[in-house]
Length: 301
Image (cartoon, rainbow, N blue to C red):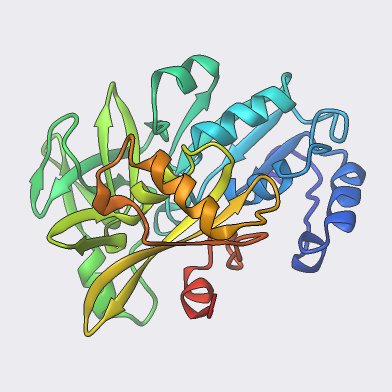
């Protein structure tokens, strides 16, 4: 994008991201007008009150992709950067990254929860499928991308290529298609992302999405970020463990766990409430800026 718009690209490396003082100095130094990151990185910055228009007065556009953009994060950004626009996008590498987009404003935050990831761009068609069956509006299924942005497959990986890529149909015309492994639905002409299909678990006979648990945790006042993990035993999910970033120091973890669980019980069924909640200063992220579930799974906390 920076080449196409004849702009300068300012990148922040991992070591700078890990040091708050260096990070905020770099953000100010960047004089950036366009912000591109995952929502998780924006949440890290929003944890500090100094992350606002005064720090980055030139910001006019936030572009997000790769993770769920929550209503809470979007609302905080609009409050801190009132002159900037926020765009939510969706699309995997296998389809040239972002293939949908929508502007997120106050009206949208009020109207939808979760937020949509937008309408398909020209040259792309989005279908929601259950196996080979195309689903109707509002029905949840696998997000399938069709069009000229879809790649021809994975290099030297015929097995995975055959599993994910196929020839679909758009109004009777054949088209390259890609099964994303993401769950979603279409409503009011816009795509809504519901998480990875492989993050679906079954606990005590109830099927649920771990990302749904996370979204509901972040509805609790004070919870800034949350990651839910299944704790396995003998091949079965025994309970859910959550890692939470709270907006203030937690002096009594047991008491805070009880408070969060009580609040969640008012809007979710009991089986969606994590049995154990661990409070952390930050959520570790992968090189792609997404929550590092593997590292959290390996922690002894």
